Image (cartoon, rainbow, N blue to C red; front, side, top):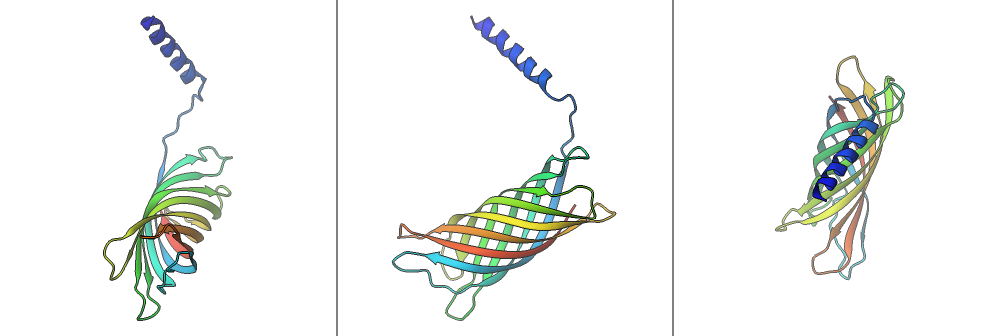
Length: 195
């Protein structure tokens, strides 16, 4: 009986391999570095003691390592799956408020809309984790970030691709001592380079 299962497993495995496309591709990778401006669209806090800290704008940068998962033929546009890590600082608006810093990392997917043009638009989606820390407060909180981005790559004759994008993010963080969460909505304007 044991030999039958081993034999069946081998036959099914070989059948699956032979049914796949016979062309294999080396998966290219792409590195990106970006930086830019962040603006807070809204802070939603429905707890008994609302979050009061005015830090409505800041700056951030991000490094991204991506793998091309589609677009290996001339007729299909490129799709990249990437792992970003970034850091953002939100500056205090007044003396009574504190600056906020965030470390973020996670997964993003970027779809290029078009192929082999000088300017290639793209749309992206990301799910990230954030560690939020506030100046003057010990420790930090972990939260999540959902982001949508739209932009364009500017292809050059070299391996460098410059890009600009606009990004909307929705973040959610726990509030210690309360069952309600704090929600932030951000708008980012970023520029960068891919190689």
